[in-house]
Length: 89
Image (cartoon, rainbow, N blue to C red; front, side, top):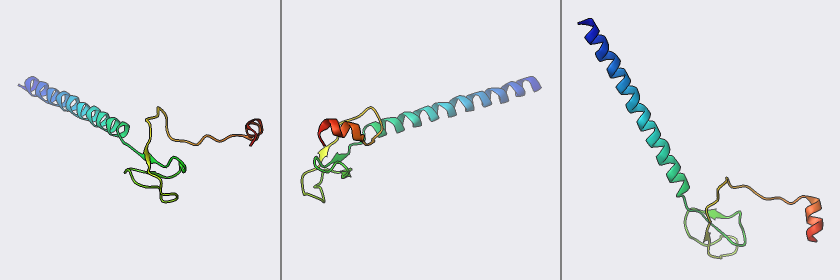
């Protein structure tokens, strides 16, 4: 009798762990898809101006355009002094 009870308890624990790990993977999948589908808009003349909606730039009034998807996090590309000299800046 105790063997049956022990087997039942162990089975319940295994089932609980299996179900909880499945829901965690679904949540991660949903988070990743929502992050990758997020659309942002930016001003062609002022790239620092961004918005979640298609609107006008508060600096110049131009229409904000949809950003293209990038494979990496947003960051700035700075030129060092040598590169600026080569570019004639």
